[in-house]
Image 1: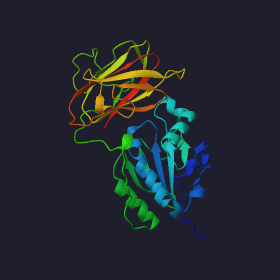
Image 2: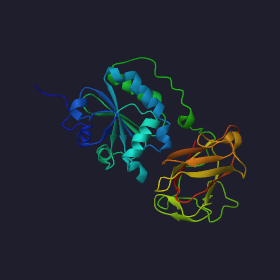
Image 3: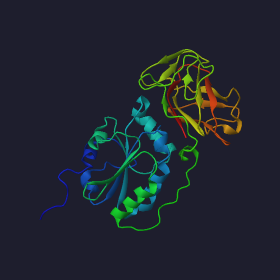
Image 4: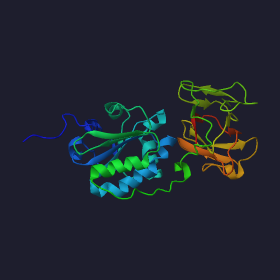
Length: 307
């Protein structure tokens, strides 16, 4: 009897993955006959965070109908290689579907992937029939899932808020900006009179490829931006000690424009390596100057993202 199974399943790289969260190890053979959404992610990525409510909703709706979500965690930053950090993120973000750790990027390379987030829909015979990179296309993706499952019904309704709220694309005027020297752009030598989308590092900082590390108390980062949200990926010192900070907008406390990780006075604390939402504008979006000042050394700053 002939088999319709492809000679090489798109899921074959799962077979050698040793570390799984929320699940026993899954294999290509074990997933044969199931519709599988392979979702590449890294936990500090705002673009992935904004897709999570949809992926979770699909998992809940279709998991008893032959549908499996496999979250492939492929780390962007050094701290995302640490299994303790990933476990904590899975719990804090309420990721309920199987997660496989891809620190060596073996699964990533097997799909020829280049993006966070990226979704690949694999049919019951192990073939990739749909793919989408980045945010959006939620209805299109769900319709592709339904087609493979033989389902025709209304798509899920997702009310995403907090860090998962979709970006305000119409007012967004500042791009993702890395602080490390490998990809950092727009850095100015002075914090005074910053032009739009330029930033500075007042104080004593050591700038490496991946991040800037504060060497003495009182250092800050200033950024002239235009967006509803300003987020910054931060990590505490190697000791793990928390570092308090204060945020200012145009030199004043943010008040109602504070983000989820900041109070109205602008105070907050770096307690773990992750993305911190520092500003969420409640009124009309205009150019503003953001500044964050850290009260202790050792904190690491990686990338600004906006929404």
